Image 1 (cartoon, helix red, strand yellow):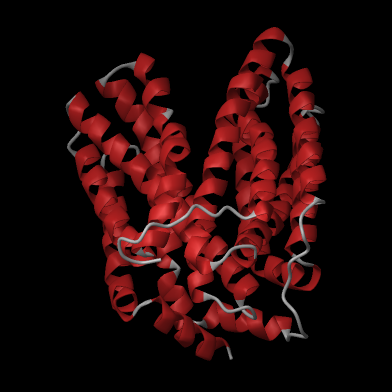
Image 2 (tube, rainbow, N blue to C red):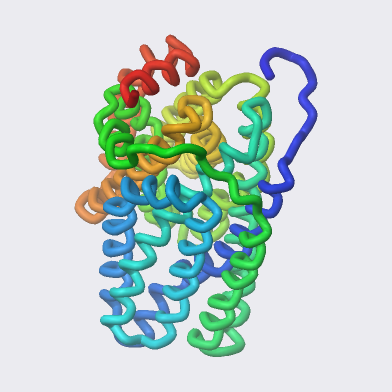
Length: 393
């Protein structure tokens, strides 16, 4: 709904259940991720964590295109259920400390993550109406980050009282609650026969989809680079004691603002939100580059955290603005693939570049994305939708 008219908050019943399922899942998984490095170090396996992470993202990216076919054939509900099982399996296998099992579980987690997130984004679009899709995406995002924050706190308490293994076993139980909740969802899926391989090929070769995908790439490339560098900046400028407080803003800001920013994207339009978010990111990155004083560092962190809080619901909802019922799964998987390429690119660069040059690279990536996107954004999302539909016909 555009303009100044009041918009009622309409959260789909299906999205409430979906959000609760992901709250429990990522209360477990994100919490385990926070402690897995120290767990491996304590077990005398310090390199396992990095290798596992590489395997997860490699197979996440490789599986993303194929996840579109699986979701289209079997439905988003079944795809998410399979994904949750792989997440639970990964957490459980960590407790065994068997290296080959952990590598195998990492590969399965990457495959499961592609099914989970292609299914989730597809389901969110099908379960919501256009006028409230950003609001529902914001509600989902707030629940996800709330679960991550609560899970990290609770697991930290468990680890301080019990062993890592018993604490991880407790975490592995939480996805069972997610599974139960997902079984309660309606089975929303596309209708009619499709040439799945042809649609996949055309999604991967659509020039308009490639140009639009720079939104996902730039968002998660910048976020990955910033989050990797920011703790070092905090330590150098303000001291180690402030790392936890300021880094927590990347959880606190989405919890506080993602829902309302998603709602605002419905009211004001996704284009306005994207452009404003890019401006926030630019100011934040410049502040971080010149952050020789604490005030500029804090401003930069706040702006980057707010930028990500704004982009998270907008990117989830944006898929529905440019996809049709027939190509939804394929565009969703493609955009998620580009998101993950952005994350992996950030991880690789962060390993080689440990200076403020990382912010210049981020600014350059943002500028290139804006240059590519501006002609598309000026034409409007209905025109983008028609163009992609023609390219995939």
